[in-house]
Image (tube, rainbow, N blue to C red; front, side, top):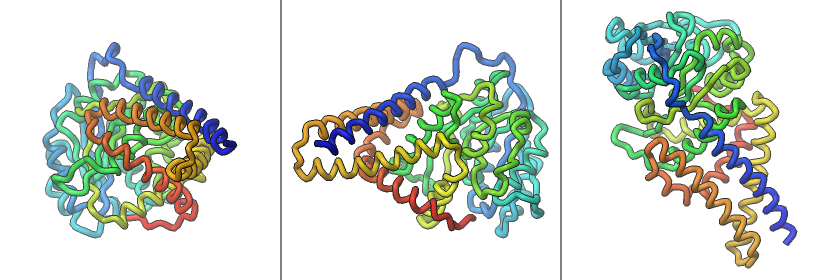
Length: 367
């Protein structure tokens, strides 16, 4: 009985957190009342390293972008590629606004992707910077949707993205359900102006904001973090930030079927824990503890403990989580992924605990 009471108390805190996420998600959505009268010019920036197999898909989608009532440019930085990436890019250079930077040098204090991004940002002509990854595919309406919601006082936009393993693959995967939950968390952080996470696959911010926040200074030595750690760094300077789940702005990503690469990516994400501010560390620690206790509660229930309090609390947890996940999936027009909530009940907490421990050990491989 004591365990059930402890679990119930922790669950009340957890449910309060879910409500905070739900309200924050709603606060983060773009307003339809104050849309800009005139589009701003946009600089698209993409870093590519050994992406020769993905670049034709990306470049084709960029060539098919619908125009906006303003100028735009596409800057692609070849980041020390050892494959045919540069040759592919050179074939497209000068067409559809595409400009290529062959980055083979280094910047003191910078490691990983941030040095290439820094070069692209420095070259950008315009204040509005739109980012995606080289393994992405943007919709034809991507720039139009960015321009549509880009108000004069709007400094940051996060867009949704879906992960595929290969062309023709289904989006009905546990990975995409899990990503949907992280997008809720990211949106809530934007809504409450308490940055938690983000995604480099589909984000927009102002060059003036980047410079005001000191750019990558202080995080340039970290291999990843060009999205979440940068957002945390910029948040005190942000006037307004939104999450735009519209399908017109959604980006698809084709990360391949390499499970080892996915494993290393999860470790890399978790390894950044020590760089996060204290409020994220406290939140992460609580979720880690709660999921561990949840597994114990679930085992006790399945073992026939016959505890009505335990059953009631677990069912309430399931109900809240299912409601919030389906609310977001409806926004991104992917409610069918909601069916994966049920296997994810068992998989996600275990995965969260594992990578929290594994990530704290560091030692991951980068591309």
